[in-house]
Length: 584
Image 1: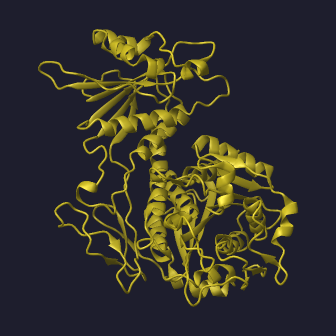
Image 2: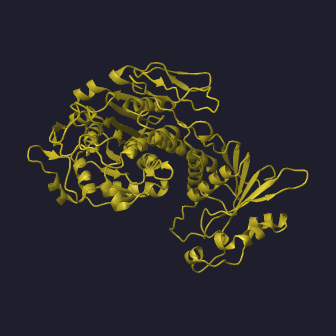
Image 3: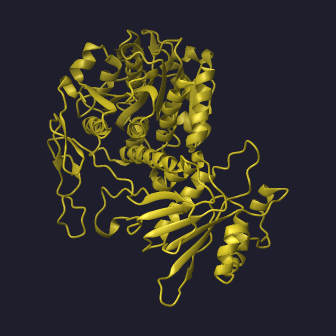
């Protein structure tokens, strides 16, 4: 990677096989806080009074293996999860939502296990018939049945619902739901070292990949800032999960491994959004990007543009916002290239990298405690970069770009009425300093378009509350003039499970962005704010080039669990599909 001022970051491989960066221009410090129960271990890395934090710790995917086999022997398993489908019905949806308990029905491999246990599975289903409904809801589970055999260890059994057979063209999301159920049960059942999941039918490679991604992602637990008994450990004893299927495709294990690689990207995205601002700033995010490159087995190169390089490029919109930051601006550019060297498509992925957003001089009056998630776009982009480095798709060159800074208040910060000049020469009147993300994105988009020469560009950001009002907390909004790009992204959304919805690009709303003194203003009227934000961004990409803006303000954060990692899988799937599509 190339760091600030273009010095070369030299990496070396340690005995353990991990890469370390030998030269950094970013200082880090360690607080006196301790994470260990006994207080002997070093605390998490954060700022000191004089210096900003220079690095962010990462959470690792649980080390338990996930494999597939056709061998029906599950004698060594501590936990056995048996999948069943409900009997065929004229109206499966009505059965799933019915308040009545259906008669218990069990056949196939579940019946064989039930017979070997003297009808214990049937009894379990009868006791939970009203809630479980013969597994009518995919991913639903029964309570655990514990059986003790004299002279051997106890074994636990759980039945998981697979739902009704999907109709032609219907996607039940079984892989995601089954993976989440497996991960949750393995965590809830303490002292489980091995788990066997016995299914009555085989799963295709897409469902297997979804199952793997979901299982590992479900087992995310962020303990970086917890101490003692506040640490929430997951599956401490689990070493293996074994899927027992009637038959298995040649690519089944590869699909499971790909799913785990995607989960590492989700972990990365969650880590970035969850991190507090006293840990994560523009410099520690740049450090994260360098480490992603160092861990990519040579497929990703890292370039960090500092203040001087950004000024040389005329990035006045980005630097205007960065003037209010504690740390220096860090313009992050990761480049993935396939090992074969064959590139059929060059794509750009831009993420909003506001590490904290106070609103600036138009200071926020509510929700400021959540504004660490304003880096959700960069989290999705860097999470996807980490996943792509592991997946190594062929045929595509991908550029992951983040203009990192904070939106704070100081004597240098921009104020309402300032006029900034973006790197494409367009002048922007700042009507509101809390519409700052689009200013940083403007120069990032010009960079992806003009300097890098990406053939198509997508951008992800937590840009507007208006999108949250429109689509709620589970669906991201997508704006694009390209029907082909919209179709590709919708397909990637369906595959990844990261939901998006195409929104109107109403050109008549452009008049809201007119300025009395500049080429454009950074804010429209209170109505249609998500649309005018998308229209603003269009000014910084060639009009003939496929470009999509994706507003993930809603789904990036869940009030119960925190960061969701939304967008990382979507981007990774889209990048991978671009290489595959180019080959065709």
